[in-house]
Image (cartoon, rainbow, N blue to C red; front, side, top):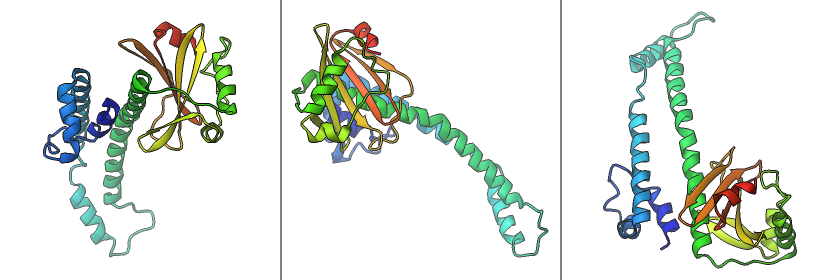
Length: 243
């Protein structure tokens, strides 16, 4: 089991410890204990999940909501004026507004967590993967990415289906195909990972996010169709210049 696979499993581990006896998490938990980097990530993930759970517990329905709903149900049996608006609906609307506000506050954290998992996957594959791939479509994209004048933040002409069908290196992440295109600029190699937003609707990154992890630097961003992560040993400044 790689650290990326362990993170994928541990991402579902509940912060209250109720999954401690679940054999599904056993190997991943043991790996987190043995690997300091993975253990540190797991501790941060558990702290984040605990904070989210605590935030949700703070959400309470409006006082008297149950009574208002029951009163509204009783009142609905009798004729009412057309312009009347049952108190129960007002209370229910207030409750929905509270829950919607909380959901919107927590949603960016969910998207950030999914993006972080994809970035972690790319970093791990760059460090340990066997890179390669071939095909006319991949070669054309590789040449374009290698040009210093190409800014990756502009929408890239990616044909996911053609790249996958003609030999571009294809990996599996969270049950879906991800492509990798390697390219060289100024003698330094960069690894571009491409995921379809159709496969990962909850993963969005409107701006560029940079990560420095030991010898590897990465940048992640999204356009209307794809989510990208580029990883390199060239350093954070070189990665920033790609955009």
